[in-house]
Image (tube, rainbow, N blue to C red; front, side, top):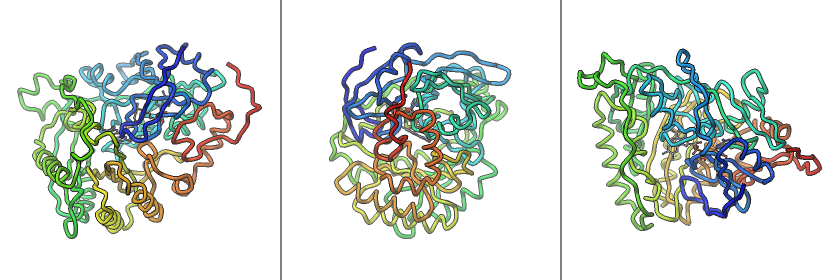
Length: 458
Ligand SMILES: Cc1cc2nc3c(=O)[nH]c(=O)nc-3n(C[C@H](O)[C@H](O)[C@H](O)COP(=O)(O)OP(=O)(O)OC[C@H]3O[C@@H](n4cnc5c(N)ncnc54)[C@H](O)[C@@H]3O)c2cc1C
């Protein structure tokens, strides 16, 4: 198996690094790759930062391992290879009445990537994170052994992989539980909200009535309007709730997106003016969300344009996502948004969600509280703003989503994730030679203690 020298980045196009890229097609080819030490798996590269890149070393694209293995149509249990993506699952199983149990804001994520970042959706407070739907997975370790990990078998390896950033082994396949659905539509409601306090109250008020909730927040609003935006709510629709026209095809799936952003927009095209025009447009679209909405526009509005990330220009962007506990929520969010407003860095898009209780205790991100995701184009002043924000989030007893991060430092990471040592013990046990590494692993010190003498057997 040969590698190609390639420049690669995450979805934010920052940082861009030179790597040696491998793309195995079968499990046997993945085994051959075990001769290439210092390696990290890659799915569809939808992590925003440096999670699936490995500068000057090896990156293994596992997206060609994309076969379904078996499906239990009674229980909705799918066994598939780890390179299968949610879009494949939807197009095959939604017409049969099954949908991914947990989905993020894009359907172009692989099962391996979903496990490695323990992704969450708009219903975390009800459904939990991706670990909720994973029954077991098979993982190829650096020493060539293929282990099954589940809640009963190798449970330490199982839990450490949720949020484990691909640093323990190549996940080869997984058994996941799908959700039974009557239709591919949602009953939705959109509410315009005028400030952050009202927004958090509205989340609480509609918590019990709606399974899914997410808010778009105007990134340029200030003063009394700080935190103004639109709260979007939704529940799965039954056939009886659809119009007669839609009842003819209740499990309709969408056709592939037709629009592609063909090249990077010039850096000057993003400024306060364009941000304000674009967010006005989002506000109008969000508030007009009808009462019956198809899953494509409900879950995946950004998937409508391929490579929309090029809109941020060649310098790239980061998505800064943090979670803070619910106590003093509106006060703390106000402090963070005020800090951003006075920084001179232009936030592009703000999304707010409420998260339920944490389910795993190592490197998984979700914990009870409010999570904000904010896009920033990369500029000279951005690293110092991010450092300040990281400090504030830490003091608020919150943490940063490692699956999106590009700038956190090791010391702050350790303070935000006090259970990192438990994770390191699992790394020491299953990958003592640090066969698996990546840019984020080096940046955050995610490595076993040196054990160079340990023999690696393939
Ligand atoms: C538009 C958009 C919306 C998003 N919305 C959300 C959201 O709502 N919630 C959320 O949680 N996330 C969200 N994300 C982030 C995304 O869900 C995660 O980054 C996801 O992990 C990406 O999957 P991927 O297949 O592209 O993996 P990659 O980005 O390629 O890799 C992600 C990590 O998984 C590891 N990995 C990949 N495959 C394997 C494997 N087979 N074995 C071992 N490790 C592996 C990699 O090493 C890396 O550490 C969003 C991203 C985008 C672009």
